[in-house]
Image (tube, rainbow, N blue to C red; front, side, top):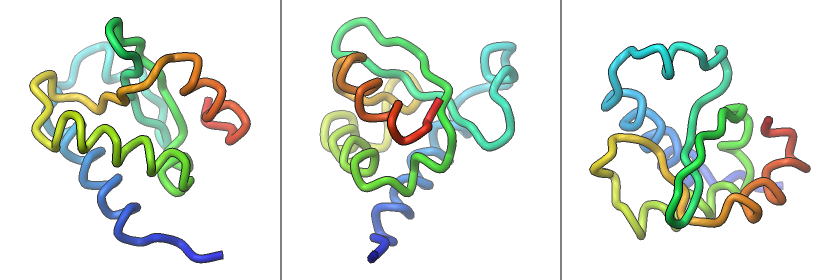
Length: 99
């Protein structure tokens, strides 16, 4: 099984930028170690706290690539946002043990 290192590196860059843009607020402090927050939705965004192990999954990496194409690395809200419906995201992430 080959691991696509460039995608993992891109995912880490997105995560680092997302975390560095936000301030330490009560919302960001409730994330356990080994997890990160992402926002999912096409119009209304819902916050999910998911395991960092999701970063190595090819299907999640594809979602990150779509987010990069849609928002770039300099997202105006300063957070990691995935441009898909909540249903699609939960269907994809639940079997991977992301929650």
